[in-house]
Image (cartoon, rainbow, N blue to C red):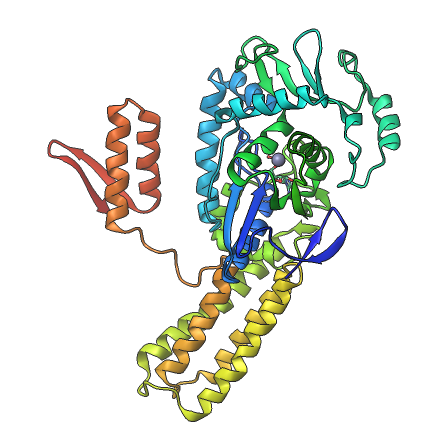
Length: 469
Ligand code: AMP
Ligand code: ZN
């Protein structure tokens, strides 16, 4: 399996640190709004990487954080007159709903920055002890970039060029820094902002330190893959490398993967430009599996332009796969011959070629567009050869192949699975607990979640009753 490594700018054979295991960290969203489909790109892409690794037999430990303390969250909280925590809790729940709709598997661990402050403080302390960080008058702690010889190795930037660029940009008020390149590890609190005590001042961490800390805590000092959108290469990932490698004295991540931008009218989709579509908006018009198909029909390192036409063609392509699957299911049920016919055995051998093509594409730096082409070859093959007289075993075997390959891409072939009675009961119990704890927000959220799945709750004197709408 080859992965394009941003660090070396080459496709490299994937060799895990520990045989059969993959430790993977993907920088997660800052939660102050509904996520847009640009944010959805890394979620879908790296979920697919994970699924393919699992298909190949690796055990994947997948960590992806939520940045739940940040200037934008604080600003939104002030606007609404609520706490920053209320904003982040709300949008984490919304983000999880969108992820579920896009069939993005929950991470093995999805840590929240605000729950990990102690570890960040320890890391900063160690960096100060080792001379890689320093405290200034107001208690701000900066990372001393010049103390890390390898700074710039990921983004292939030269320290001198960076320095002249930064000097031009130097902002007043930041002159306590030894060097314009230095970045913040800890900053003093401002009125009305969330803050934590620390040896330097009450305050909060800088953004970059959270990923260094959470990656170390949940995956260890050395990991296999670190990933995110390409805008994170500099400065975020460069700074993460500086912090982690100076603190731990080890190479932080072996492979660095970055997805290209999702654009609209050939400009990056972003909250600040206001040119975004939320995943929620798309879900009003399409099954989110269509969005997933649209994303995977391009290579993750190529820019992708969002357009209504492409969404429509993704919709009909996905339908073609689903129709083939439905036909195979019918053939299987209606077949009068149970076991493979002689000619079918040879055809099944031939069909293995599509799986091989699929794997070859995925092994080549996760070329999902070519992998989808292999899926379509299988679809065409099934439509041609699984005719009315085919055996149940033949139709079943082709359906199984199709389902397995689509599952690697996170594409489901039928309608969404129905929610099971046990799951409903468990959610109702959780809602009762939440109400007992006077956590009415969570209780309402559960009612909403169930309603979305077509389950109506009724509070009666005998307890909670439910029915399917
Ligand atoms: P943010 O919430 O801005 O920190 O972004 C969360 C993730 O989404 C990061 O990995 C970003 O690189 C990624 N991202 C944001 N906008 C886009 C976009 N237009 N295209 C692709 N990835 C994006
Ligand atoms: Zn990060």
